[in-house]
Length: 349
Ligand code: SP5
Ligand code: ZN
Image (cartoon, rainbow, N blue to C red; front, side, top):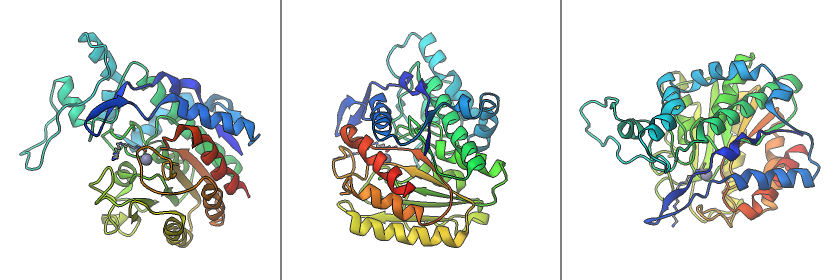
């Protein structure tokens, strides 16, 4: 299986996030991707290529695709945010301080940078620093090039994207995510002529951003298996009764599971989602792969074991459609490489 990867992600390295009332070093860090890459090399899983190698045109085309998924004002905000912040004399990461609460009479976009930072985010979990824009634009190109390769060769492709993307909505960031890499990959496949794309999100956390982007659309079937929002982050979306709206009605399914769920519960939800995907007759599957379902994950609450990822890959392969795997979460850095490698090995068998 070919892996798409770009070094640019190293430039994005947040300083701190809030956990249980304390500022702690960011769980989402460059070593995550480095560990995955090391395992892929050790397992001789296949060639590792840059976006430019497989799809040189991506450098002039990515902005067009991105603008179909995210609003232009949000993209422009991210493009200029660090310049504005550092021009004001700040050196630490940008983190938002205030969000509009319920019953805000009308939500206007403030002029101040702090105000816009709150407007374009849903939590303080997506720090912006000097390397954020280069990293997120690099990784969007990784996702698009992987989708392009899938379109050309119709066999599974792995996009080693970082930072992750599934919490990023049309015009907001949060939960370590800025641009929704999986949504961009799905959009590129549609632009290449696909009629229907299935997007299966197996990260521990609900893919609230992806749901937001496709909620009113019937050309992307969104399926998400995640920690029950009554107990788990992000906590306000991911209920089973969120099934889409307008033309998208019936094209969104959530499978919330209780904290503590293991492979026996998890695999039942997977079986249900694969029935949906088969029935939809998708041209391709975008897999939002978080391995934070692992029992040793420091911020998540499922109990999957390393071997379970092989079975996960095998079950997904049985859907019998081309898969582009987009990397999302996973914070047990010592095991992230093995768990990802196992999923990919399962997918190939
Ligand atoms: C892409 C992705 O996996 N984003 C996850 C973002 C999680 N952000 C904060 C999680 C807070 C978890 N709190 C755990 C409480 C343990 N007692
Ligand atoms: Zn996650």
